[in-house]
Length: 329
Image 1: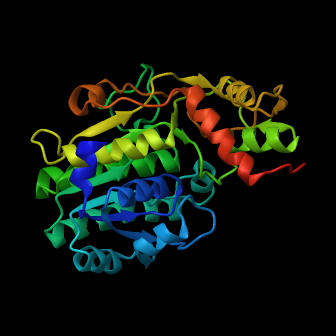
Image 2: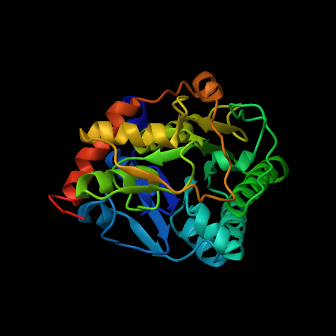
Image 3: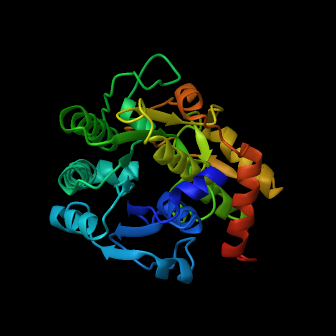
């Protein structure tokens, strides 16, 4: 990361959702490279993060929601922001299904607030908006490529489709220097959300409980290590100063899609334990198969994942063992 380290030193960066799962890793890596980081989050100084107290002390913290426009613009101006990573979102599909109004407010209004604040601020060199493979909705042809139509059918998916269209609008109409990232399912150390399959499977394996799979176990997804994506964001930010990058969307994937059963078996393999799960087949309003082509990121950014699934899961399991030392369910 030699070139990256020189690039980010003293860069003034604003991260929305900086204490979230991906946000905390991005914050950690940027601080390590000498960036001046400001962070906005609805929860701050939380215990459930990979950030140390020393790292949190180095962040200029703003507590609040991206739904609050004046807070965003004020933070961007006061920090003299050069780069914005917009990660704050309602990210759980189930929560968005049960409260679509809040999902739309946070994910859509929040995105146009960030983009408008960047338009008004004037100092911003690059904005990276975190989207999702869900923005594509359902397509008969796989894998998803960046030129596929955005047609999310369900609340979370539609919120991401809309946010991406807004990002595109701000680039083409106002020349806001924005890029969009679309990833599959992230996993790794620091994910405390046990409604997700990897953390839940690891926890069940470590605590001796049976894992309950909501779907039929055949849903297919990308699973990509969180550190690979944090590093991808930093690479993209650096590349955004080059012509031909701004205004683009990029898929990031290890391009090895797995069914739920396959990822669960891989987790138990990393735990050196026999799988113990029950299939509930109760999932609704979710896409059956979705996975990404990352050829564009490889070609235009020179990106590739550093971690294999096995390496990522081994590191993930080691970290969760520090959270559940000897606990029995």
